[in-house]
Amino acid sequence: MPAYVLAIYDIVNQREYEPYVPAVIPLLQKHGAEVLVADYAPRVLEGDSRGVVVVRFASEEAALNWYDDPAYAPVRKIRLESTANGFACLAKQFVPPSS
Image (cartoon, helix red, strand yellow):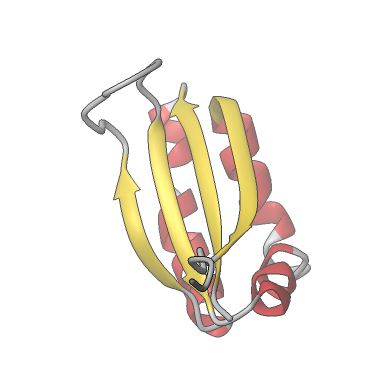
């Protein structure tokens, strides 16, 4: 069953953040991920504006393999050091209850 990584954060240092996307894309591809949403200025309906990223993986295991990949550690560090107010989670696909 697909699993999704959702990340919400403010980019506080654009210059330091710039290498993140080119570095993370090959790692996501390596783990079979698909970026569904990447919007750093979404239209806010409730709450505070933050960048939003949603990535789909084939499974929770695939998502965790990406997140725990030793090659991702220095890339993750770029994101953590150039952003603030961050939140990331692993969520399962919604399955409606059967009637």
